[in-house]
Length: 287
Image 1: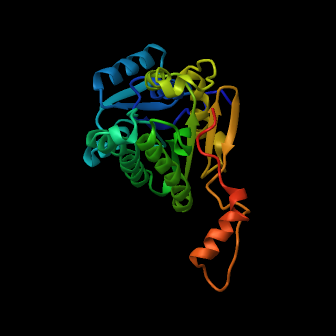
Image 2: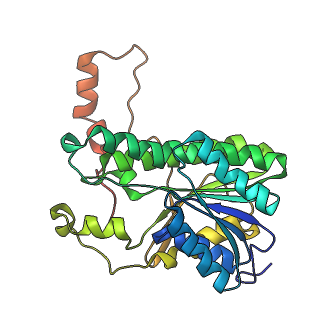
Image 3: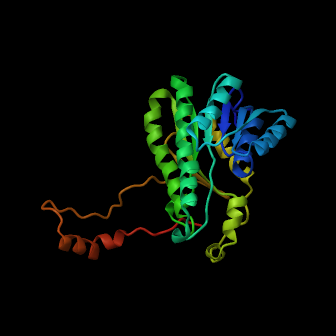
């Protein structure tokens, strides 16, 4: 199969949070490559508009207005794909929200809703999708962010996206026996959320690249959903403007000290004063 030749023809795919921005771009591109697409968003009216666009371009899609943060509603999204198209071959866990605030200014609603949509919602949809895929196999693409490495004003969002990266590593191991490939992407684009961040004082002091449209990230998602990505699993892949790269997994640095007789307070202080101080990691995601 050659790239760009209807590489998703015959596949049924669910994209969550697909009413606008990156999710819309993923859904539109998947449909253009032949997929039958479930366009999910809590804003069902906007999801229907995306479906109408797909239909106008000759694609096949349905809209499902539901919240992934609800276990039964997440199940209804996956079931709609099975009911309409007879199966589910791919899931893109894109739905997400991003409150921007200093940690001490976050409300309980900020915290609860971010974790519920970004992390719990990805888990709910993933579990339901895996059950529907069974041993026939399929693909799950999670969405993460550089915020997992640390960004001002994004503590809870970053924690939720670090969670989706961790899901990817474990799910890839668990799902291998069922022929389900799981990967994650770290996209880069100007969206409604990112545009708000760019207006903050913290962002104003950083060097920002020219705006990248959401559509520039869609081919990576389609690639991972397709058979072209066979053999790729458990990876986080970043597309940052012109640069496509593999994100390293959390790992131990080569800086370590071993004491077979155990660690006292004085021993630990000495280790950091000598060897370990040279292995301290930089804080914050790269621009």
